Image 1: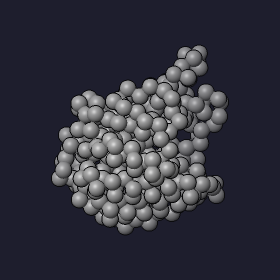
Image 2: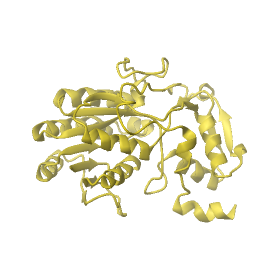
Image 3: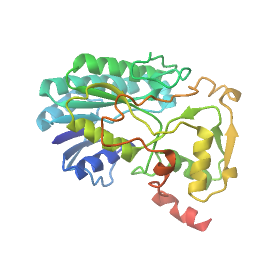
Image 4: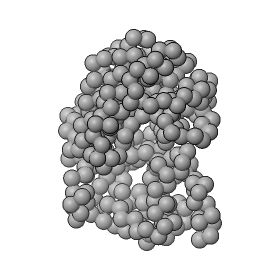
Length: 305
């Protein structure tokens, strides 16, 4: 199968390309400014995804069997600062990809987010009401609507949680960000009252490959790890995994800081009906930890402790 992948140099895109390659698929990756090696790709094209015409021309030239959309501006703070730019990537691009998938009769896997929910009534089912409290969540909810209007026969939307894994730049996932802060002696305040259901990108990537291969699983689905943990518990588990002092993780409460008081409290996802229909199974957090490594640029610091 020939798969066109947007966001190919990101945390999830990299993991997906490698998982698809292991299944003998051909992955054509679209990237922005990344200049490193991406071993999962058969081809790599540098493109500005804000350029509608160039994006359409390249996809039509490639004529893929499937399109996997991992491109996103996923930081709520960045979305708030650049709403128009993020709307192009988070809303307009998925809609464009859906139209092209419909035109090509190609499978579309669109990555959405737990952030479409308000965090007040977990565990969220696929048919639970979306009520995002921030612009990023609203953009993701709008993208889902447009994708399935444009390609109802071919589209699968996968809502995903907080991700962890090993990114190409070593700065994208939970453990990489915490390790960077610890290496700079920056206190890492983690909320005891904010709950997430973290998932390893490798596990999620395997799910996405299965969805590319299945033609009977269209619509909106959820995927995550098997456990819901507080941000503080996640931080403690990561510190202990790498043999670092638990005291480096400082317990904090969202409501004590006006900047974070509006963040969703609990975004736990119900994984049915997708769980059980795939060979891949949800992982506990302890199993996810076994895959995490020290980023290359932090190894000298880590070895000197």
